[in-house]
Image 1 (tube, rainbow, N blue to C red):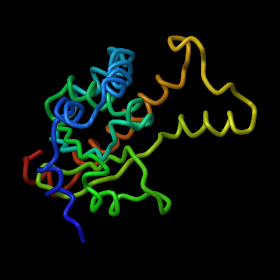
Image 2: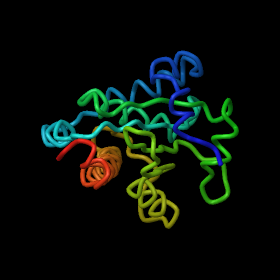
Image 3: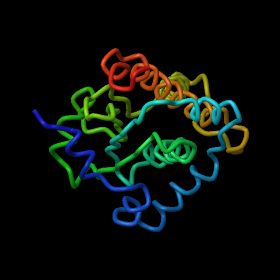
Length: 187
């Protein structure tokens, strides 16, 4: 079995990932999402309340539209607290990780693996959030338009931010309430 925490250690920062793998048009799409991702004061309070270190491994493709719409959200979270430590791996350059993280039998990205501070895998999350899938299902059923021509009025990106934040909070609570980690930290 592949040790994914070793892969986290081999991962690279967001900026280095984009610098190495993204074309100028890829960079523009990722930057658009970063610019559009505005965290509320409530988001900040929640993220700043985190107590446990959270190493995060994100398998992504700079060319991938789903990655461009989601990975910058992870970086916004990491900007708020140093306890979130993201590292990125390119899907195509790390075929062994892609095989390990297949979803529904397919090579999908982004996929995030959350770890405890001492390298235990805590959770996996990806490739699209529940809100994104709900929207895609509504489009497929003819109940929603494919894309809102006014990005500022589109509720789906904000819902995706909340979906990701909910998962980060779930993992943080799992870490915070872990008897093993509570014993280590004396809390």
